[in-house]
Image (cartoon, rainbow, N blue to C red):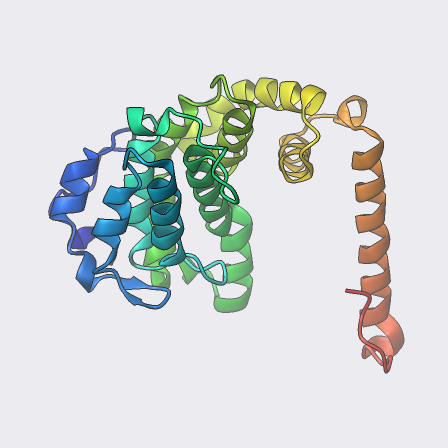
Length: 264
């Protein structure tokens, strides 16, 4: 189990441990990562708060690489996610280091990773797991369950950045907040997230962010037709066409009997 190997104990649903206590008290070397165990993680994670933007960028890449592979929640993922959440509002990340190519601002990178990880553990992923492995899927995937249990604590840090001065930070915070808000104690925040989503759709051309917030609003029962631009409509229609072609391919002769590969 991931977080039980930390002596800090599980925080309450809306609380985060201090980042230094998390670094010091977690048995990182005992936790599985994408390419081994996490003994190198404390150094990399600590360096994310370095005063040099280039060092911060490299450390962020090194740390997140350890727990990012094939949409998997690893043993080390939960304490890394908690650490990332605890430092989101740290003064060291307040500076805009967008001028360190090819890296995006560290704060945006961290929010994007939290969002991607939250989507890898969202309700849709659980439903897919249960279809393939049965209703006890989450009992077996303890790492995913541990991350899902801590969504309120992580959300509490992400939420503070929804009104950030930097447009990229605001967008990344909103996209991260959406899957976190699937937790039952957070559903009351959806109305606020919809307000932020409407603002993003009125001002942003970022394809990824627009897709995420449009999907969320539709899933929450909102009519988005007045908020979609021409590109949104084109993407939606293309997806529907490709889905229909794929379904037709698989349905051919009841066996998927074409000799060519499916459309995608």
